[in-house]
Amino acid sequence: MLKFCSLYSGSSGNSLYVENNDTKILVDAGTSGKKIIEALNSLNVDISEINGILVTHEHSDHTLGLPVLSKKYNIPVYANEKTWSVLPTDKIKNQKVFNTNEPFLIGDLKIEPFPIPHDAIAPCGFNIYSSNQKISIATDIGHVTPTIVENLKNSSFLLLEANYEPKILQASPYPYYLKRRIAGNNGHLSNETAGKLITELSNYGLKHVMLGHLSKENNFPELAYQTVLNELTAKNISLDNLEVSVASRNEPSSVINI
Ligand SMILES: [Zn+2]
Ligand SMILES: [Zn+2]
Image (cartoon, rainbow, N blue to C red; front, side, top):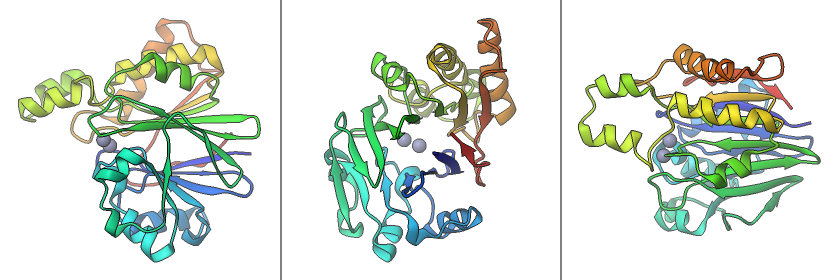
């Protein structure tokens, strides 16, 4: 059985936890090592049990805790070659390189990275398989590409970014260049776009979607949830078969059993 928990999710730091019977991994470590260890402890998991950390991209809200966790606990850190070229490699121990588009194993979890558009050097999302189960993680996405849609099909669980509400972003005091960056092709995903993608994926075996990486300034959990729900109901998709939840910024989500 696969288990998933969002430890932290949002522009102030991201770290996701996935386990099956024998393997425990993190996806990103974008807050202090101390906070990540605390969150894992709340799940009765010790940091020494973590078999590896997958890195989606180099932004600090995904990588801040890597130096401490890799040096102090010697946890293997997995990133693609281009991402390593912009990470502080002198501060991170136990470096492992993967090729995006080439599956690999950590313990008995199969990891399948896929490319996403975002303003980082070589950002990726991940499909994670345990026997015949598939879950997906797709965050920091500027726009939805056919590659993303293909990769997310037939996942029973998806952590998907729902970063901002366009009207709030427009009215926000953010400088113009930042607004353009967020809403641009290599920025972040809006609530509505997330809702449309979920609607499409609901025809391909999706049972539970957790909205994540919500902007603190340009979104609200209730609004992200409701916007996605509106997209689903507009297409007559029943919530009997598809659960929607929202990851919290500052505390672990409930543990999802897949
Ligand atoms: Zn990013
Ligand atoms: Zn981010």
